[in-house]
Image (tube, rainbow, N blue to C red; front, side, top):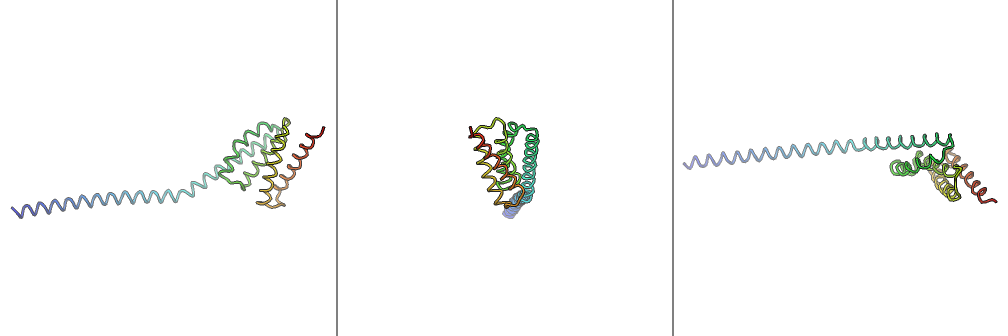
Length: 168
């Protein structure tokens, strides 16, 4: 009888050990799967970030192109809200020194001073924005870059509109 009890006890211990080993294997497999999944996600993260940045750049470029089309048609009042909506996204995703962002800032300032219904406040805001984007463009691209020259030309145009606005 003692032998049977010892045998039953040993069998129960083996069964418990097998169950424990199965649980440990299942836990290890789950942990390993989660680790591999996390590694895959980490490996995919840079690619996803690049794709998101490319999509944002494409969106900002499309907004710029649309704004330029509106400028060609002299529909500055329509370009302003478009650029005002898309500019924060471009700044956040592409950065302040990205060429697309700088162009959007420049185009928005142009829309402010080129509009026939521009107020003195609009003209002053345009000058302020052009001075700011001009400084950034000069720092990023240098004074000889075409974008810097175009921004400085627009700044002169906006200042002359203020002078004409103030003149009797």
